[in-house]
Image (cartoon, rainbow, N blue to C red; front, side, top):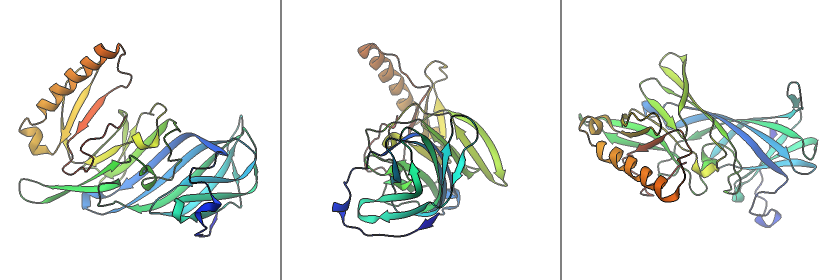
Amino acid sequence: STQSRSSAASDVYKRQLPNNTIPIRYDVSLTTNVHLGEPEFSGVVRIRIQALENTRSITLHYRQLTIETIALYSIPVSGNPTLIGGTTFSFVEDLEFLVITTPTELISNQQYRVDITYRGLLRDDNMGFYRSFYKDTEGRTVWIATTQFEQTDARHAFPCYDEPQIRTPFGIEITHGSSYTAISNMPELSRSNPAIGMTTTKFEDTPDVQTYLIAFIVSNFDSVENNDPNKPQRVFAKPQSILNNEGDLALDAGKKILDKFIEHFGVEFQLPKIDQAALPDFDAGAMENW
């Protein structure tokens, strides 16, 4: 695909994404070397979409990302996806729109897949996909990569339809230093080692969820857990805090609060686990990532 850049006036577009396509599923792959303190990260997002009308454009959100390549595929009812050549992309920067233009019309009700490779920088303002740190017992800086996507910052980690009325399942995998671990909304599915000193952690698919409720943390945190196979809970914090039993209160409170919610609402908890994480700096105070 080829790229152009535009600063078209906002009144050319509605501020809300056009309703000509919708996402069906995301698969997000991220790579970070935050264990070395490096702010750069890279990613690939594959978005399965459905056209809601005949159109020659797909509009997504993005923020502070360098888009490297975009490939568009048609998805047949059976058989393999087919590459649609000749796609181009441009930007409407004041609206944070990434606009993909196709050489031929996308057909209403048919499905397609958009593959986007990109690069970005971990932010330092506690928003989006950002870099945090703490000092260990010897005074050394230990780096963390974590997220705060509410309200409109998921688009900083991956191009997406970043509006709260849109819900889809997510598949997420993160490649990180092997001395670190990664956690996300769902339980870990597998780990592999694609390179010396690096680990890829893959997670189970989420239920349908809004972009702003997606979360992941890459850190050297330790954890304490309740060992309840029916409603597993864990508390993550810097290793010294866990060693000092400082996570025990949060774990005990988490169990009691969840039990009280189940009793009060008469509804069982629907997800397979709960993690709490104590981040050293967090402007929002707390965030309820589903």
